[in-house]
Length: 143
Image (tube, rainbow, N blue to C red):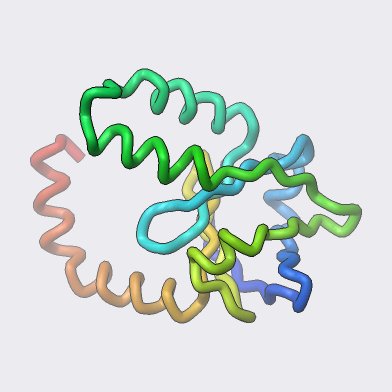
């Protein structure tokens, strides 16, 4: 189970140390790709296969489906952890997510999200300010 919020530093080579409690989940590697809201998504290989299956079943005739599939699939990289539990975040993904030095890794149960700390704090503040409205909309979905 991937949950929680962890702050780490990105080193000058673009490497990021994963939280120790997440490392065993990614022992076979991690798939990194462009996420939504200017973050990076990180999937186990098993979860990645589930995402790919859903994406490849989207109708090619719908522009939004093609665009979303392109965003996720074309930005994907298969990454191995080094002996110290670090991953090298490819430069295109670092640029996409505006990653600088301070990073937040957020556990989202079936994936992780990698955020620039400033972007995460801004996003979290906006979300917290809208939490009541969000909760009301989710109640329409039965949550």
